[in-house]
Length: 407
Image 1 (tube, one colour):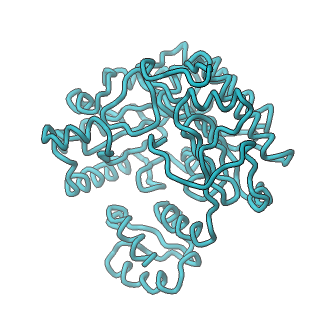
Image 2 (cartoon, rainbow, N blue to C red; image 1 turned 60 degrees about the vertical axis):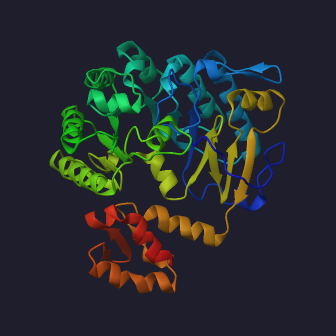
């Protein structure tokens, strides 16, 4: 989760939601995101709300640590049930992100999952994912996760090239990635995903090809590949500002995206979102599809964002402040916004257009529909029935296409 929280409207101390949002519950799939805000080191490019041991502190007499965090997260799950009432809300997906969730024990992670199941119920075949750093898991750990009910693991590979990992401040040995995938398979995970980053300063196209080859040699079911963004306030941004490393180049990023798409396709992985490829429809990340299609989810943890029935809110950032509020019987929410119908329409265009399933043309206004023929003539999208789908060139220019459709 981003480390800088946006401004918003105040939230009642009990976290109560507007009645109009509660009335819409059950219309869309429902899931949980659980943010685990701990890392052993802070990567130079990372802008997420994460903390090393030395950055944790005590607030209001409450100390938070890896050992106590699961109890705080469980308390927020219980609070979610109280806020949402006794509605039937079976959970379709759970996603643990960070930070590094696998710095907590399988038992602690499993206890949060048990609380979600006790309070809401997990649907049969629910997708339960955790992110994992390659150097934070072994076979015994992954056996423990599988026994706790996790069905999917997303491994933070980022690159297979040592000097690229060095610029990113990643500490794992590249050879640890295929080992982690093998352990995950041996533990019984049918769904294994790898996360990659391209465009790191100093990364050549040949370096990126090496990383792609190494990732695909692991035969993952799913790959996410994101262009590096130099976020303000990060160590990498400071290095760029001092001239120590260059900013990512747009043409270089485009070349690397095209290479990734070609290599994924050759390996039997098809794109289903601009930055995500899967073996088949069953291998897509169903939890991320909640975000991209405007469904409902409750975000647990410091800085975590939630969305229910058109209301979005976000929690206080620091783990100690988060635990302090829960211990005092208060909502950990920092602020919220109630999305207007126009806000929701704009978000649908922004997000659904990125999907291989495309955007329903009915979402566009008159000006947006008028822009479609020109975009199609330029080869940036195709019209398939009542849906608009980006071409490969359109994916490279997705933001510009969205601007044209919303102008």
